Image 1: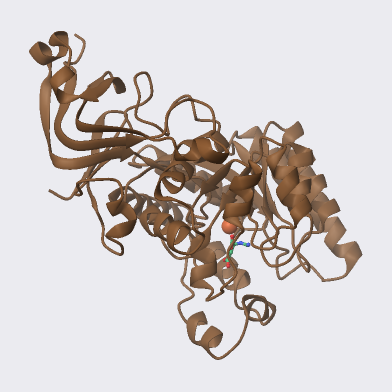
Image 2: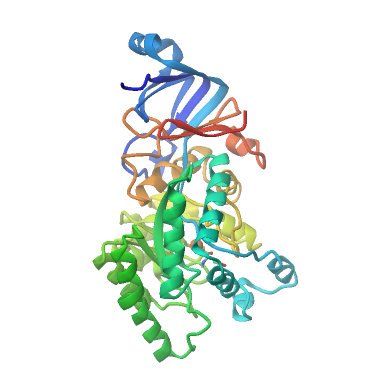
Length: 421
Ligand code: NIG
Ligand code: FE
């Protein structure tokens, strides 16, 4: 027998972007804001959204009811860039940064990514899976219902596969929908000598061994590479991403994070789903993204956490017409948070997005970059019922009332997956 629909009533507001396409420029501000709102959910999807006084009779008669307690409903956040399956922690790097060492210097001295690689290699698949699940449970409490999750701390065949298998194993129990990405080209591992020939041979191993094995088990929907001075060159990045595409993994790039390597233009040229970070993107890169469907995925938590005043030029990207999204970059070295709420706050308070632009970037535009904009990212009839109820009278409070968790209840596919009540 079909389940009874659910009526969520007594909402101060529903606030959501609309559509199955990404939003650019001024359109990022066009939220639908319904006052005194109600939502009807049927078979895991939104069936109706509007003012409570207009709920159609067919639903009034047949629905189970949920009291929205005067809160505000927003779409579930889509966190389209995370490094969830890692072990260990790097809290000691703070004081080194206070004493003046940079992220790059810490990495060069054996800290940084290499230390997380050691800890992740030592962890079992089950341990990693439990870590992923724990982080997904934190994410959902802060309103995230879909998250991308990258490998990239294994850096050899066995350990990259272990990380991706851990994501898959966590998926069934995860309250958050997980979308896996192969980031075998995150860094060169400590065992790879630093000369050009050895590094090129290592890239060949990624392309000829690791990625085909990942594809054979269908462990990743996307592939990614960290193009940066001293890490992967543009040409190596291109090789990795073209190989990934041939294997059925859509490319994304860590681009122009610590310096301008023309990564944004490479992303646009290769038709990447996203170019991520972009703190050092050039004008040429901004224009290339604006002329493409590659999403500019901005991660302000990273600038904040690394104590940098340099944030990605979000206003410029929006004003030139690029598709802009927001993500946590959740990882132990440069952004240790699962909270999309703080990311939205930083986007407004430090990158000067409007609250409406930030909400669109954190939901619909992120869903588009994961190929899920038809399924999630907005509250409208037909989409999966992924949403949060904020304990707040309007969506402005997402930024206005900062530093606290405003989320009271979260639904994914129409089911309650988190409640603070
Ligand atoms: O997205 N850029 C490289 N990767 C991560 C940081 C990884 C780490 O420090 O462990 C990032 O910022
Ligand atoms: Fe990252």
